[in-house]
Image 1 (cartoon, rainbow, N blue to C red):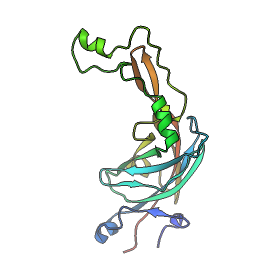
Image 2: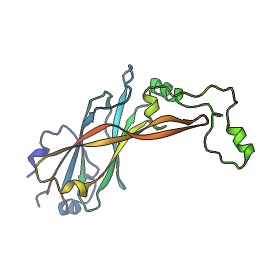
Image 3: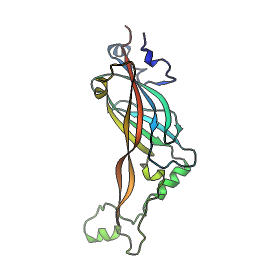
Image 4: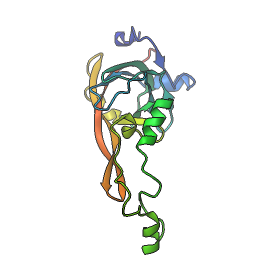
Length: 213
């Protein structure tokens, strides 16, 4: 009989459906529900903006359907996994690269001659990278593009299930985890850098049950 905590889940994304039936019987099934994002501290565009959540482990790479981005937004998707001692995975939030997002990202790209890490050696290489003395100082734009990686990643959370299993003594466990992202900052006149920071929280629910034999 299935755990009642799993009832009512609207949809389940399962990477294990094509696995061995014997393997499924030998382990508990783990349901990880991505409830949503909470308290995002990033600029939200006026234009409709879509995000998705990707579960990535050493074996699986699964992406949810897209939902609308907001400071507090609902994802409401469930991943079905097989529990084992080394179960680890990342959850990655990506923003769809629509035209308004591409424009915001480009606004936060410094000119090619602004500076950066040199692959050459000596003063000649430095002079080739350094901007002219009268060049204006690059100023990042405070928009969503400032917080995105080139592939649209906004933030991620890494989970080791063994750290959660000890607390999973109830039919359903809900936990909030930091969503770690990045922000473009000016390091000096000649360099920019990505500052790692928490951009919000991701709310997850966990449940598990042992299939009947």
